[in-house]
Image (cartoon, rainbow, N blue to C red; front, side):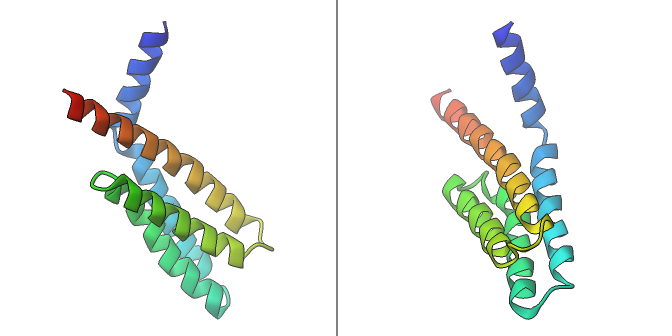
Length: 114
């Protein structure tokens, strides 16, 4: 039963929908920051672009992709700490992006050992 769950999970994460979801969260961050103050707006736009690009960079360099994800979410969420949406979006993006990172590393190890 455990093997079936692992193969089903690998089949789901093999599709880019989770990486696309992280990119959508990054674009959502850009849209939310357009109506904020100057420092929050700049950090939100730059951070949103970093978050949106991070899952696609993870396929080439997992370290760079993880750094882009963490910096892009945490700087904006820290500057807009008083908002509910900014930290919540950061937590969701970090959670899903972390899962995509782990799956990308596992697939990279699997391909290198084959």
